[in-house]
Length: 223
Ligand code: ATP
Ligand code: MG
Image (cartoon, rainbow, N blue to C red):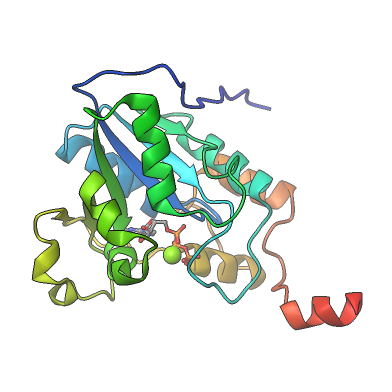
């Protein structure tokens, strides 16, 4: 088995000129849409690194079960290993409770200093929900946002008032989502080329996403 070096973020990196991209997500699983978006942002915005931050508890409701964080983290390590500009942070995993972006950026600011420049990278779909984000006004004051175009999401809906803090990044549209990958696995369809080989091997080895776990069934069994 290939050895991977776990590039956790270090906590002694104060450097006033540094520009850091933060790519938050559930990463259930991490796919080439995430990786390409992060790499494109790195190049276009001259970022020194992009830190992938798997969340502990998604704050935006998902109806189905979220895979154990140890798997989502391991797949994040596997997927980012070959890019020397990519790192993975356990910052949200080590914090109990909901994974609020504002807390994450503040923690990173304490690590890297208040002169560092942070770019929170999302897809347009995620940014369209900004009004619902916890302490969004404070968040918009302490980092810039980069929103990548994503099929099915309308840029015109992005409010003018965010213009100062938001940069739209037009990328070749990738109609790839973790939801679709989970569906593909359940239905014996291929996921080759839409996740990295290492991630695909990990998914099959650990038999992830084979069946939809319905919460009510779990409740029935335990009750
Ligand atoms: P799910 O279908 O489970 O919601 P997802 O593919 O949207 O999964 P997330 O972990 O929810 O992945 O997303 C993390 C971030 O990556 C979000 O900001 C999302 O908008 C962005 N993202 C995910 N897929 C793409 C894509 N294909 N193109 C651009 N941005 C993407
Ligand atoms: Mg999503």
